[in-house]
Amino acid sequence: MTSSPPQRLVCSAKACRARATDAVVWRNPALHAASRRKVWLACQEHREHLRDFVQLRGFLLEVVPVDQLTEADG
Image 1 (cartoon, rainbow, N blue to C red):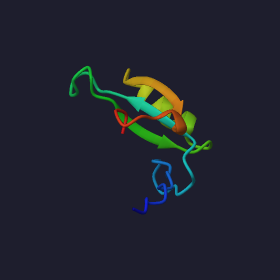
Image 2 (image 1 turned 90 degrees about the horizontal axis):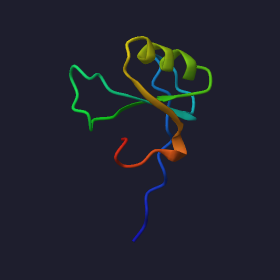
Image 3 (image 1 turned 30 degrees about the vertical axis):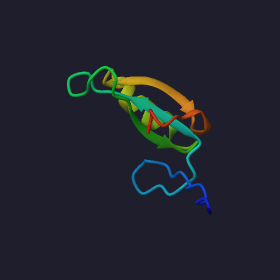
């Protein structure tokens, strides 16, 4: 059995195709159950912008390196 090569993780910022290094994990409590975790991937250049965007709205849960993501996050 042949395994697929790992997918290249790409930043979620608009028009950015850079490799993602971090994951911005968030949830909108008005829309999502407490167990729900949404993830935006971020390159180093856009990490602060994406984090600040969800943090300003009170949605930020955490920012973690992409290699620490689990199946439950994605």
